Image (tube, rainbow, N blue to C red; front, side, top):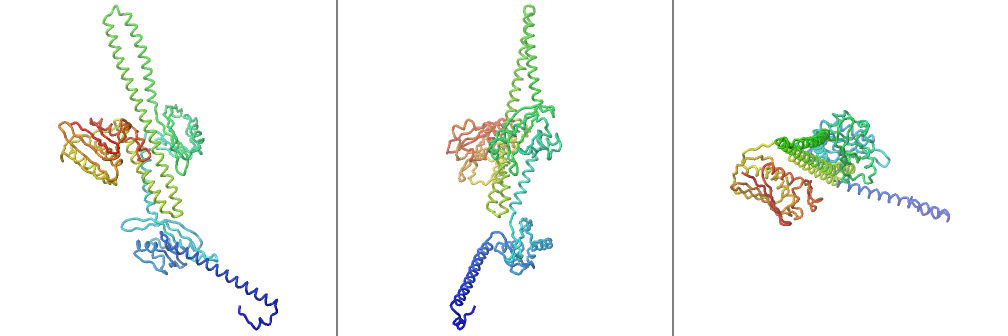
Length: 573
């Protein structure tokens, strides 16, 4: 508004005041508009900083698919995969795979129609495949009209590769479970439906998809419902590691056989609480026990009758007395042998139970870590947090490595304990075989300790099963690496004597506490000082001891806390 002082002089007082009030209102309105513009400029500057410095590629295109703006990460992306430096006004189609041009045009058109799209594209460089998640989002102006489309690229290569490795690992686990000759299944606590069953269970019971477990076991012979109620009353359902394994024996009418039933709580995918059930057919075992009891009863009756007959004929038949003694002696030997067999069978059953208990407990925690990490990765992918994604991918890798190592140890203890290994003795150079083992361990581990060799000679030909011998030496070396500082020293010493060959693994690690030394070869035993600090199931040294006995060798050790340990296997020539 322009002020005309001649007109102002002609106005009366009231008109003059109104004139100034109107001018003041216009001034205030213009000031508010300036403040709004300043705020918008600040927001634009903030958005610009976020846009430019975002670690993930970002690019904005107009309705002609020409580039309006892009950040530094997009420059790196374009140069890496297309060897092109992008410029404003350049078509975005220059940065698409040739066979995807029509698909990209259609997606851009859909975004300019108001749709947000998300999909995965693959790129290659130096014979390596990369996966990017692309997000097309329409950008609106102040009038609510679509003026451009932003394209956000998220590198999910590691996630895709990890998902592939996880899938392959789960396939291996499923293959192992499907190879077992006993039934395994998991039931959802809330829905009572089956979450999983192995091949053996499916072969026996048919397809169980979407079935309630009562459809398969209408009489609920082994009372799984009681265990479900017990779990449902647990206030801490998410902590599956605290759920003990229940073991009971039941006669299941459906199969007309006796079974040992083991079940425990397990955290399944998507945070479902389930019951993990193992069904072992023990019908023959029970029949053997019944036959043994029947035989003992008949044996006792036979002895009593025979004794009575011998007493009546004692005066007449001197030789009959001798015969009776011989019969009694034979029967005693048979009974003692049966007792020994029964004791051995109980020991085997106990070891099986211990293996199952530890298998269920040791597999629960890493499976829970894998399940929860995958769930969190999906969430962090939505908000674009690569640091947390990498952290949980590392947790999955650690859990997978631990499961693999535990699976191998459990298999070795089973094979060793029950004598399932087929011995293959060969005559070879022991020095060469030990060197091959050491090199394979160095290649498969990030070893920082200094490895030194003290060999009395370079050639010692010895006949043995080298697969078992290498398992023993590998266990000693793995323990030395695990319990020795990163800058420590590990020594492999081989000495040949007149009647023996000694292989020693020496370290300057933490040593073994005196109170633990008498128990280190016990199955599943672990020192209290290492539980929670170093992964392990307490199987390694017990496997080594069993294997050494099978080779006719001896294991000895000497350890001083905070000084180091020396483990030696002595081979008899």
